[in-house]
Length: 341
Image 1 (cartoon, rainbow, N blue to C red):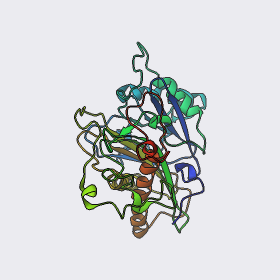
Image 2: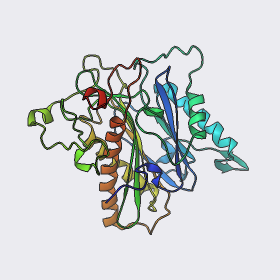
Image 3: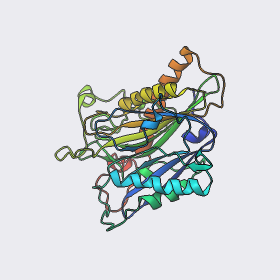
Image 4: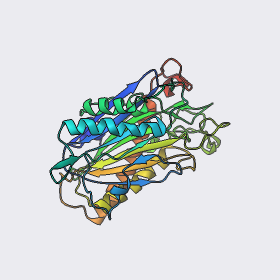
């Protein structure tokens, strides 16, 4: 198997990503625009999630297709990004039609990045509605990963107090022509690297040298057993999360999308240690455009499940690997921490 042409979630036709961020606040928003009809669902495994419109994605509920997803910094304030995305969608005449009216359907989730060194004293109005609007209007097939959009102010575990997190994406082209794509905002309690080494937990799934090509075979066993968590001496409830989207162009039902989201969480667990803790809000949306091939057989679904996990793992590692340093950062980027810049 190999990545798609861009090695991004937008290798799936009909999906676009937009980023917007604020360097003063050290936060941002990422929006996935669905330009085609789709089927969507979600699965939550973290103990401290923050989300919007996730119930409608349950398989037993009515709405099948969504207009967009948003992933945002800002903790609960970041849920305001949906207002900006909805405004952009209304301007484009998008939405679920009800008696001649259109209501944009925009599920989303947030990370906690309010104590990352940015200026969060915005007085009366948070910046997130504007960031959501900008991100929606910035949407394109090509987009930046690392310290951009919702990953702009993300932090994660690692050596010392931790490492900068980021926005990551990856894709995989299956032999039958189906594409799996992943998007991840990495703000986890756990670490993406093994012990004090620069090697990524996701190394077994790396394709080429997309996050350094370091492997992990030479890491001592004691390093593999080490637990490196963020802010070890000062944990705050809900201050950590990996939120993401797993997408495919295979035709899936809503229940099958739910299962794909469940399996994508395995990719989080294979790329971060520990994962899904009581202090993480880990959540994965799933979306199917249904444009390629016939409904998958059970054997094909199993293959897709494995690839969903490996692709999510690569997206997590790529987000951390691509992070960049900026003034006022609390943690170094992966490159700076390990002398690779």
